[in-house]
Image (cartoon, rainbow, N blue to C red; front, side, top):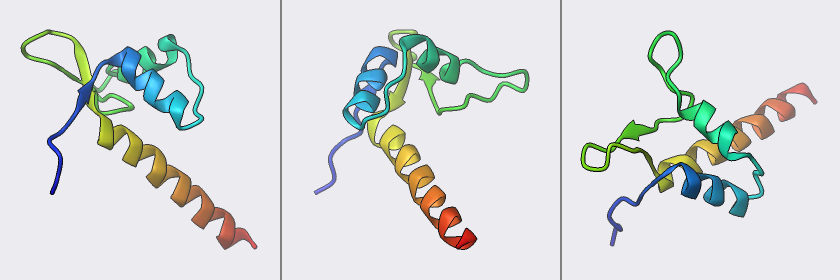
Length: 80
């Protein structure tokens, strides 16, 4: 059975990353959530229409880091 999505705020996103061993400051998380000149964010945060605060889906955040880690392993294997 699939669980419903769990949307988390900036502070909680930082805590989730810390649990994964990724130590970042709240400022770094905020920077990743800010849109760039083209309106794109480094991480897929969105403005919650009810609270008006930035949110991200927890599993999406974890999946992004896992995908990047697997890609790094794959890329390093190509070098050998």
